[in-house]
Amino acid sequence: MNKKTIIIIPTLIAISVAIGILIGNLLDRNAHPVMGGMGFNQPNKITTILNLIDNGYVDSVNTAEIVEETIPEILKKLDPHTSYIPARDMQEVQEEMRGNFSGIGVQFSIQEDTVRVIEVISGGPSSKVGILPGDRIVTVNDSLIAGVDVNNNTVLNLLRGEKNSKVRVGIVRKDFDGELEFEITRGDIPIYSVDVSYMIDDETGFIKVSRFANTTYDEFVEGLKKLEQLGAKKVIVDLRNNPGGSLVGVLQMVDEFLEKGEPILYTEGINQPRKTYNASAKTLFADIGVYVMIDEFSASASEIFAGAMQDNDRGIVIGRRSFGKGLVQEQIPLMDGSALRLTVARFYTPSGRCIQSSYEDGNDEYYNHIYERFHNMEQLVKDSIHFVDSLRYETKGGRVVYGGGGIMPDFFVPADTTGNSEYFTSIFRKGLIYSFAYAYADTHRDELTKLTSADEFDTYLDKQNALSEFISYAEEKGVKKDREGLKISGEIINTQMKAYIARNIIGEEGFYPIIRKIDKTLLLAIEVSRQNLLVENIVATDSVVAVQ
Image (cartoon, rainbow, N blue to C red; front, side, top):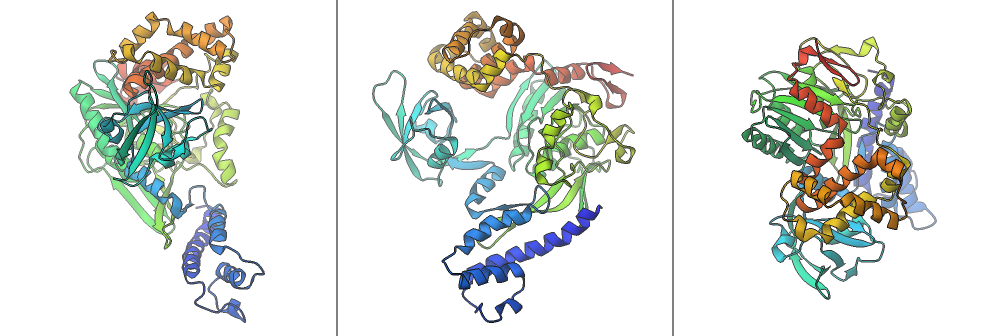
């Protein structure tokens, strides 16, 4: 344990006690006199100063507001993940972890100051009253939201509300004159953790997990069972860009792959005795091969899953080094409905690795270390990552792995820059692929809804020469046609365009099978899986898969 930790932990305990006392005191601020020697009888300086201000300052002061602004500043002196959750934000936090919220059941996009319905959740409140994909939401109750520079948060706040409450929505629909009005009764809307599960080939399944919540385990098991029924003997689990979440969910998921007694992880802190989590022999998926994809934005629970698979020699990890978030938070409710999310322990992978990246240089540097990785070209060159012997560990089968921040994959895949051009950059910055995909789907909805699979979309859009339409659309938006840029980036542009059009009509089942054509990490994972490599026999190079 480093010196900084020894200093921080007692301070942390003192601050958490002080915060509890402080808030309690605010609720009863007038119960005791504060002038005339009060400072000598109060439990701490923070409470003393606040009471002196509240009762003796020349002007009226909102000390509760001061507290709200001060607590986060205090917590910045600790680790990057200890945080304060104001009471006003608690509902949203609880919804994220619970895996649902109360709303009207649509996915929307704001384009050209217009709220456009992308998808209507089947069986949800909007579906029941007849809202359709392609509808434009122009009013919510008495609020105009079209043509007024509206943002996502404003729309979400208007559409969400208590379960069984009612909201009036004004709709403009293609080929209909005037405005349609619907009264919608809000209901529970699921927040899905598993974006998609589908078969890549006859024996390889793919499942994308975008977050970890209380519902993730059930969604994951349902997805894998579906893949097994379709013949999957191996599965590629995509945890890229997954920031983590529920510890319980990931423990349950790992438990389905390991034999009884195999370690999943352990946690330990100066005030938290070591606690080990072992597999319980559920092993629903004991016979399925596992290939885990991670990147620099995979964090927390994603790293627990990848680390447990890797350290137990149960799965092969492919991609780039993960973020390095290995701290355990406990959420402590406070009296006013807010909460303190306090770091109480570190978690360690079965081999003993603490994957937490260093935050000794401060929280800002900690969050900016991703950009430092790009500066060091770590995303492009595996050899730019240097490890030291003190961080050397071994897996169950004796393979060498390293700690010191994040999970290092068995197969490194550099970030793909081969399709970059000035033409593509201009298109990307303006968001033209996304906006064109929506406009195309909206205009051709009648024909596109007859297509049922990603392959059908892929073929149809090529026959319709949709790429040529996009190039003309980009010109109208100020990006001139660039033949050289199209030679370099044409495949990426065309693939992304088709994938987004398919997503707008049939959802993620349309998007992911198309986009995989330009996904270098997934293509390598598929190649590794097809070679049926055993973990103990793999050798990874920057671009080649080989067997010893």
